[in-house]
Structure formats: structure tokens, C-alpha cells
Image (cartoon, rainbow, N blue to C red; front, top):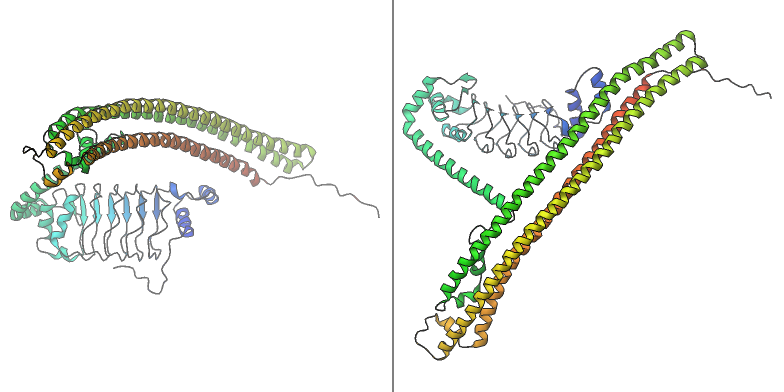
Length: 541
């Protein structure tokens, strides 16, 4: 039964509520005290429980991008929403709420366990993207159609299904039907699916299942084919050569050529166009091949850079961890020296000598903290300078690759323009020849009347030729300019993003170092330092 929370006001998910929830599920004891004084970093939280909070609406969770487990059970939530920014979520509990529809889960592609138990859901739907879903608990809802269970056949990883408490569970064929139509299902309502159920269902619905299997296999084949095609098209776009692998560019030159449509009616024009096509298409294929080859080279260069950056960062991190371990070992001794000096002062009495011993011990600890800070910051400066130089060198190499690609493709585009210019000359000669025939009223002129009428005026005919030629060049120039612009933009963005990423890493690392050392220095505040009382001077009246 859903929790109604009668008499209680709904709760809004706010920063304070989230901070409290994170701290509640955090470590206990001394670690808890440390955590309470640390800023709550929502983006690092892996699991979050917001059960029994009287929450009405899912909201303000956008910072929890690393969540793998989220509990929102036993609230008064009416709609699934605002969780698309949790791409790593594997476990989601929305049981005991007031949800009426399964929706807005498309981004949760890694979801493995979903509980919607005890809500108001009537239809199984909108789970197409949850191909990793293994457990679905949706009992105690309003699902009443047995055929609706067929929707779950699309979830190949589903091994456990809970439907008890729905009207559909009262159907006499409930177990046998589900066992037959969901062949991958192992558990139904937390009980092992019996072979007997499955065989009963298969016996009764064998024809339907065979037909369904056939259709699903065909759909799966088409989806895989479409996926491969999309991946191929995406690769072509990344290489900046989409639409150049075959005759697409040539077709684009002529498909929108309105002036050329009239010229195409001339006897002999079709042969000229086909000849041009046999010349242009192979050159387009060369442009395509150059783009693919250069994209592979860029990808390899980028992959090497990523490995180099990772190795540098990992090596520095390993050194930093070693230095911090050494510090923590020394810290125990140094804090012990401070405690011993204070104890000596308490036993022997506070005087200049015992106070000096305390100050010396404290200064030794501060010097060790400063030494570690200098080591870590110095190492970070060297690392940052080195990585930025590596990125700059990568940028120079990448610039050379891009320049090489553009030089090669520009030369090939120039060849296409030369071929088009030769084609235009031939079309001009043919057009003038046809013009003469039309003026002489030769009977062998076979063109539509509207086109024939245009060929009575030389200026009009030359205007058609010029317009067709200009359109072809516009298409060619436009395609080359788009390639040039996009590849240059990609180059600039790639280098800029790498530098920004390193700048952010460096900034975060500096903050982390300072924060760590500040915490170490603050431990001195836990000591009560005894001091020699200051002498009060008697001032004569």
C-alpha cells in the first residue's frame, strides 16, 4: 500500500536535504567529524538514499553525475523526471510512490535493477534503452493486459520480473504465458520459472512465438544494419568527407541546376554529362580516401597524446602519494613530539625552557608541512608546464596534418573545376549549334516547346550556360569551403579543449594540495599550548 503521509506537507529536494542525506550515509566516528568539516562534493557521491522523505517531485539532483544507486522509495512522487543526468545509474528504487507512467529513463542505459513496486502504473512501456536491465520489480500496480508483457521481450538481459499484485497476475495463463514468451526470464515473482509452465505456454502458443521470433530477428538484423550505417556515416563526418564516397557531389551539382535542366534537353547533352560524371566521381573518391587516411592519422596522434598525458599524470600522482605517505609517517612522530613537550611543561612547570621546547616541536611540524607543500606544488608546476608543452607540440603536429590534408584536397577540387570548365566549353559549343538549328527551323531539333523557345535568343542561351556553370562552381566551392572551415574549427577546438582540460586539472590539483595541507596545519589547533604568564608591570601613580 502506498504511503499517503496524511497531514504532512510535501518536501522539496533542496541543497540542505541532500547535504544531510549524504552526511547521514557517510562514515562514522573520527572520519565522520572530518567529513562534516569538508565541503560536500555531490559529483563524487556513488550512492544516495532519499527514502521516507515525503518528497513530491524529483528535482535538483543534477550534481549527482556519478551516482550508481539511488533510493527514492516510500515518498509521494507522482512522476519520473529530472534524472537524465545520471548516466552511471545501475540501481533505481522508486517503489511505494504515486507514479502512473514509466517515462524519462532513456538516458539511464546502464540501469540493471529497477523497482517500481506499489505505484499506479498500468502499462509496461518506455524501457527500450534499458538493454542491461536484469531485475524489474513492478508488482502491486495496475497492469491488467497479459499481452503487454510481450513488450519485455526487447529486454534481453532481464532475468527477474516481479508482477504479483497486478490484475494481470490473476490471469489463468499468467505463469505459462510469461514463461513461454520471455525465454530468458529465470525468476518470476521471486520464484524460479518452472519448465512445466514454459512447456505449457510453448505448446499453446508455438505458432505465435515462431512468427514473433522471425519478425524480431528480421527487425534485429535491420537495426544492426542501420546501426552500422550510422556509425559509418559518423566516421565519414569525423573525417569531413561525408557525401564524397560515390557520386553524391556530382548529383548535387546537377540536381538543383535549373538552367542546366533546359540544356540537358539538347541532343548530345546527356552524353557530355555522363562523360563528366565518369571523370568527376573518381576524383571525389580520391578526396574521400585522403580524408579517411588523414582522419586515421589524427586519431592515432590523439590516442598517443592521451596515453602520454595519462602516463605523466599517473606518474606524478604516484610520486605525490609516496610523499604524502612519508609525511603521514613523520606527522605521527612530530605530533607526538609536540604532545611530549606539552606534557613535560605540565609536569615540570611552564617556563622559558619548556615553552621553547614546545615552540621548537611546533615549528618542526610546520616546517614539515611547508616542505611537503613545496614538494607537491613544485612537482605540479613541472608537470603542468611539461603537459602544456606536450599539448602544444601535439597541436603543431596536428596543424601539419590538417595543412597536408587541405593541400591535397584543394588540388583535387581544382581538378574537378577544370573538368567542369571543359564540360562548360563543350556545352557552349553544343548550345550554339542547336541555336543555329532552331533559328533555321531544322526538323531534327527535338526539345520541349518551352526550351525550344529559349533557343531563339543567343543571349538567353548563353545566360543558361553561364547560370549552369556558376551553379556547379557554387556547389563545388561550397563543399570545399565547408570542409576547410570544419576541419580548421575542429583543430582549434581540439587544442583549446585539451589545454582547458589541463588547466582545470592543474587548478583542481592546486586546490587539493592547499586543502590537504590546511587540514594538516589545523591539527595544531587541537593542542592546548601552555604559555609563561606575561609579567604585569606596576606603574607608579
